[in-house]
Image (cartoon, rainbow, N blue to C red; front, side, top):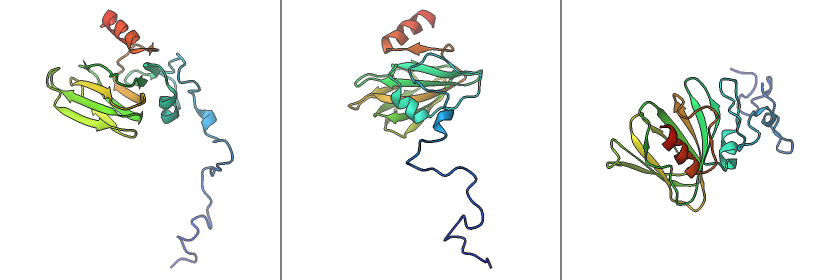
Length: 177
């Protein structure tokens, strides 16, 4: 039917549209990344934004950093120390997506503070979704910090939020919420 074998050389007549990757050269797309320093304080919200989310999450040393806050969505990076947790909390008006990039822990959710009946172990590559109104916590059970990114819809923290430590975050939340 065909004049050539489709499977032996997929580029016999048409080359790839994108540039091919050569491990000996620097990644040509990495320079397009807006997020050079994961510990910077600039929130790039409401502007087009590109980030290597895996690398930025792993390099972040702040408890919480918000690289992008829009009208209906917010991206945060977090680093949870060994033996520590996010803290039992509830977001009445925000759905939340969390993906673990490094470390391990246990996520707990439930309808009340005293009934966290949903418990799952989470590892790098795992993601979980917290529906608005659910009480939840994430506890670091591993031997290194949990590195994660979280997406809130709508935005939850003030634009440009940076909390170097969990104590900083708790102090601000106590004063503002």
